[in-house]
Image 1 (tube, rainbow, N blue to C red):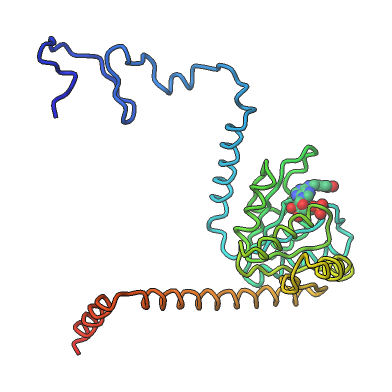
Image 2 (image 1 turned 180 degrees about the horizontal axis):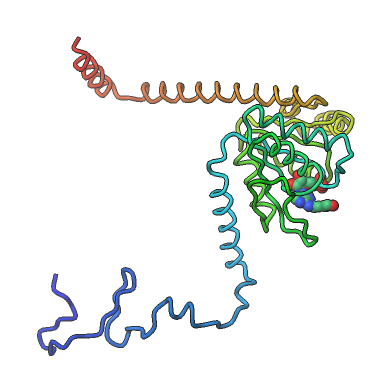
Length: 292
Ligand SMILES: C/C(=C\CNc1ncnc2c1ncn2[C@@H]1O[C@H](COP(=O)(O)O)[C@@H](O)[C@H]1O)CO
């Protein structure tokens, strides 16, 4: 096609021309500075850093950094529990045991990267030579990641961080804790209940701590029709670390078998949906390539 800038009646003097990606600019549309110059030279107003569109980009960058950090993590379990559990509390020792034994069972350990139960689980995992992950949260009273975190990131937003706990773990261990722990536990249960995640073992560790809540779920929530009986089977409650780990491993085996069955069923569906002609052609090809 003829170049529209080359008009037969116009003198053929070279015109200034500029290419910006796929965009062509000529004559007085040519810009005298480059994008990079403008980026580096100008300061301009800065109030946009406090606007939602900019926050959206920051949120996006948290997802990018988090996904990038954890993409190759392998099987992992998230351990939740109080930030206030002291090292002399039996739950600190239990969380440390969880860290070590989960590593022994082939899992990386993910925590909120803070003090208390999180620190204990990270310690157990790190000392056992496993992958000890801490997903910290920026808080007004800064704590930073505990010293036992071997791979860590500090998040600005709780909701981005919670996506990581779920996306990169195959199960949850919930140790005694407060609002933060309950938030994380109910997020896991809601995702499992609404089938947003398939097969997600949740262990509530510490019968004396959790049984009041579980009784209330049964006697009030269930009795009032706010949950179903099956919803109470989405978690187990125990005081035994080994039993908890067996429960998680068993759930993993069931999930693997279910995934295999689902893949086989999908293949059967595809075969059944195939047209008779296509099936004949495939069968003829198979017999031909067999030599039979
Ligand atoms: C309150 C104190 C420290 C807060 N530091 C935290 N660092 C990382 N993660 C945290 C922190 N506080 C809460 N979380 C998250 O919630 C869960 C624990 O909350 P709880 O209310 O203490 O049960 C935990 O699993 C974290 O993911 C020190 O005094």
